[in-house]
Length: 273
Figure 1: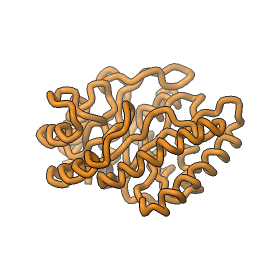
Figure 2: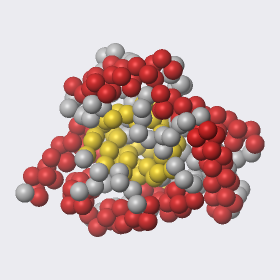
Figure 3: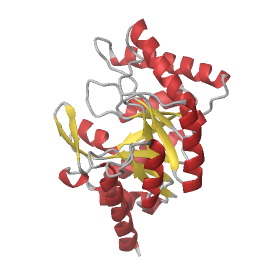
Figure 4: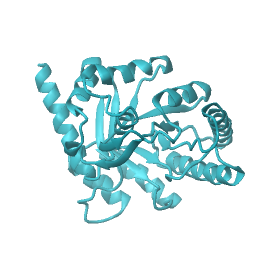
């Protein structure tokens, strides 16, 4: 199954609540939505209402933790990051979210090996604490676009192998930026899925946006049409392999590019007939 939806409340939704955003997303013919905590957390009551409305509308819910997370930092940063992730997981649990996505941290002055070691240790501690509370929502680890930030595809796969209860979140724009525009052909997208085979995933969460980049990696997001990622070839790769995926639009024109992604998916389906 392929679901597509926006990251956050659609920009054209007049009422600016998550509940209205879910209903509006359904009206757009989309089938997923990411609830974002970039500007703060919601109440437990709202989380429970999101679960009820999303089920009624057949909208798959995903969650994104606050952006500033550093599980490789000093004690203060790690404590703050743990609290944010655990709070996000608890709310994701209440709203019946399928995956709670988070960033992981920065290299700073650390070696890549030491950064990995700290992140794995702290993620295991988070997983163990939330599991004791009955929270089983998978922790999604997002691939990152800036080269000074922990989160290459290879690093994310390695962490997922070391920490149970984690899954990769494949940010296509970030991967494209980090490898200086390497996603050009259908085979390039296939290499991403091939790299994930050892994780034995039965579902893939994909973030999608256009992106501007230079030799240091990601600069900023742009609408899909203003980027250079051949999204139609991603869709062909997904369809040819019958992958079960959810695509979340992180484009600056959020729901517009979610709908555009749906159009590209439909176009790819027609081309394959």
